[in-house]
Image (tube, rainbow, N blue to C red):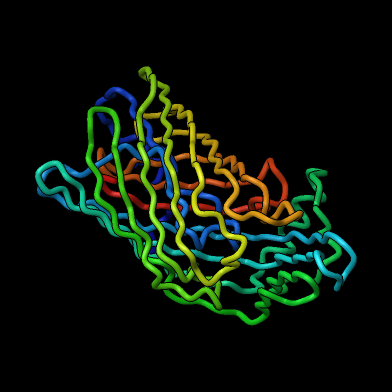
Length: 326
């Protein structure tokens, strides 16, 4: 027997629950730029942990549409650069965390696919309706996959066939301290740089997530940290060795089980020795959405991430995350 979705959702939201102090947490989301997400950018602002001896888990989906094209210098000449990033990327992450005596042992297993996708028509219509700048997207073939970077007239990256595979696995140790979680993570080169599912090198990060000031119906959060990158197979001569990351967020409790959230996430440049903003700029991402609290420990996040700083982050990324105790 078919059970209507909307009545079930209304019943869930209307179910009586005690109104506790509001402690929102950040989206499990970072910059999904196709040449930056491979370096294991940490997600910030989730100062949560399972109870001692228990396991927390999460299932995340980031569905991203990206288009940008740029060049510098005379085509084919020494010192010239040209880039086209026209792709649709889906990243699915399976996460787990175990609390052993107050220490958290964490693992993140991502699966990444790149394709021409099918969002271009929808995004073109959205730009037409809102009047937002398109960045030249309307002049490119719809639903095309082309990730290409040329330097000195030579193609260094040239991906035109749909691909996918295991991304770079991350393992972490974290320690909750009051309203913060201090975390150290290592990124393993389990992905494939040729498929843009990994960087081909080791990496790591150290971050501090925290809960900020809050009230009964509102709350804040944030995070700061540093990303460290070793020599990899993706633009190794231009890759920086480290980058700073940070985030700030605000949540509003609309109902005991429903909240609205907005988060600002940024990082310093991951590449150097380039005149192109797609590589040489730091990034800023604004993520807006909300969460449905299915229980006191389980939530469903939904959000849209956009790029106020052109070129260094994708046009749009749709984010969904089912989380239990993390």
